[in-house]
Image 1 (tube, rainbow, N blue to C red):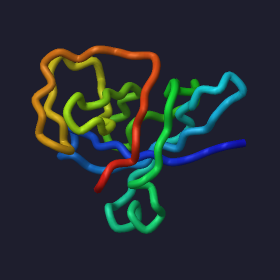
Image 2: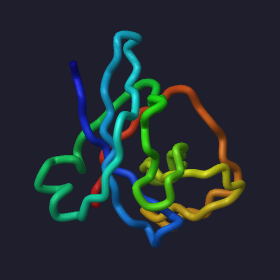
Image 3: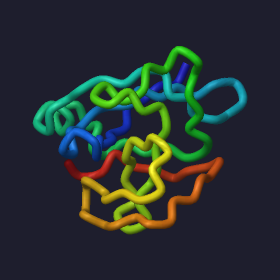
Length: 117
């Protein structure tokens, strides 16, 4: 079993950082299995800020969503390419870089990295 953790931020709770545990399944895609709050120092210490994943990022039925706002969806910022939890908002501001996202597009495949915290 191949598993990893990538980082995301919650725009609904002041940009709070959290980790998303992802696991590669037999279909070759990554699946989100768990999410947990984490602080920047621990994320860097664990190396989560440099992890990468390519492919689908589906959610298991048991995936709890963002630990702060419970959103099960996410978007990838078009500017910084980092992950942000998403609850079907039409517009939002990226808590990583401040980019105003006013046209959110869904995708089936991603190339994401943990990002500098």
